[in-house]
Image (tube, rainbow, N blue to C red; front, side, top):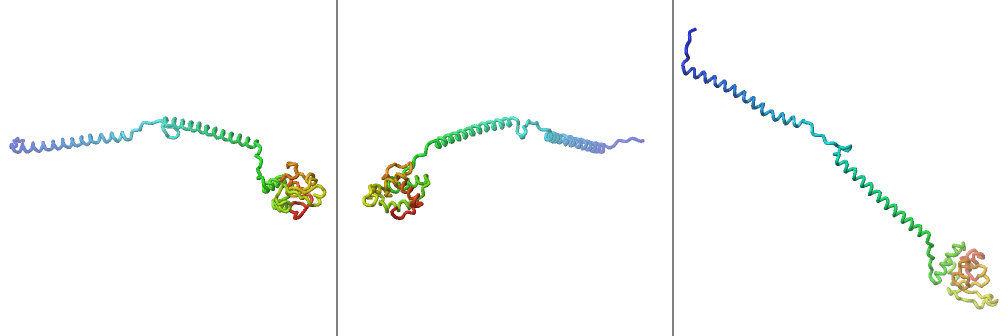
Amino acid sequence: MPSFTLPRAARIARITRTHKVALAVLAAAGATTGLAATAAPSTAVATAAHAPAAVTPVNANGMPAKADSAKVERPVAASVADRIKVTAVAKQGHTAEQAASRSADRPAAPKKYTDNLDGWIRQSLDIMKSKGIPGSYEGLHRNIMRESSGNPNAVNGWDVNAQNGIPSKGLLQVIQPTFDTYHVAGTADKLTDPVANITAAANYAAHRYGSIDNVNSAY
C-alpha cells in the first residue's frame, strides 16, 4: 500500500482532536473521583449517627444509679421525720390524757349562790333535786312572799302556835317541831337559816300536799 504523509495542518488538527478527547476522559475520571471523595464524609456521618450510644447504668425507675441513691436517702430522712412527728403527737396525747385525769381527780368546785332570796331558793332547789323533793322556783317564791315577804328572820307572835310557845319562824314560817321532823340532811340545823327553812318546809309540803307548788294558803 503506497505511503503518504499528511500535510502539516492536517496532522496538527488530528493531534488537537486526540488531545481534546484525552482531556475529556481525564476530566470525567476526575469528576468521578471527586464525587467519591465527597460522598465519603456523608457515609461516615451516617455511620456515626447509627453507632450505638454509650450505656449509662440506671435503676428500676429509669434514673441514673447515682440519683437513685439520693432518692433512697430522702425517704429515710422522711421516715425519721415521720417518727419524730408521731412521737411528738403521742407525747401530746399522753400529756392531754394526764391533764384530763388530773381534772377528773380534782373535786368539782362548789357551786356559788348569791346571799339573797334568789340565791336561797336556787340553792334549796338543788338540794331538793338531789333528795327527790318536788317543787319549783315559782312555788317556793310564791309561798315565801305570802308567809314572810322574803324576811328570813320573820316571826309570827300571834297565831295559835305562838300562843302555844312554838311560834312560826323563817321564810316559810315553820315551827320547830315540824323543822326537826322534816329537816333535810346537808342543810344547817337552824330553823331560821334561809336554805334549811325552805328545804324543810318543801319536804313537809311534799309529804302532806304532794308538793309546795300545791300550797296556796297557810299550811
